[in-house]
Amino acid sequence: MQSSLDIDLEHADPFEVIALERNLQNQVCDDLEQLADQLGGPLDVKLCASVKDRLQICLPLYHRDEEALFELMLKKEPDNRVLAACTEQAAAQHAAMQAYVFELLEPLIDMGAGIVPRNLDTVGYMLRYCFDGMRHHLQWEDVSIFRAQNRSLPIADLEQLRLAMIRNRA
Image 1 (cartoon, rainbow, N blue to C red):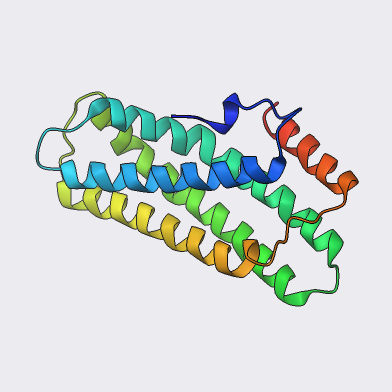
Image 2: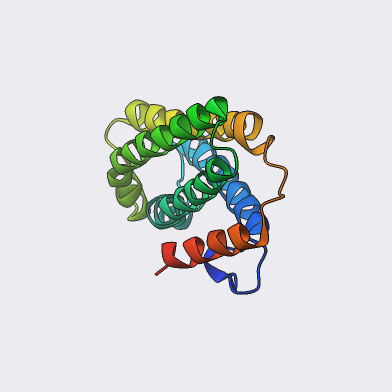
């Protein structure tokens, strides 16, 4: 599976990288759902470890990349109150999502080590709440923010976005 961490940002289109990251977030949702479906039976421990790493390492990076784009969008349209409110809400949801992920790390670490959770119902709820919330968030961002983005940032802003994404990985 390709990761945005493997992309040469010096030469990549930042919009394409963010699109890839959004696809990868949807893949994390699919994998969380698969883990929830496996509870009570054999667990894919490799998938547990992979999901844990992507939630812990990649998801915050994806959020920072999106928020860098939000800043440039707001710079382009400083009087757009709807865009300002939407990007502020998206950033707040990113922070909330990270709190949910933090709570989910312990059971994912245990399951990745082959330890069956003591309370399957609670872990199942946590997994489902996480992937369902992430999916709704991504869909909401698509409709409220990314649909409005026409990919016409000036070259200088595009370069700023690229540099911000490179800094996010440093």
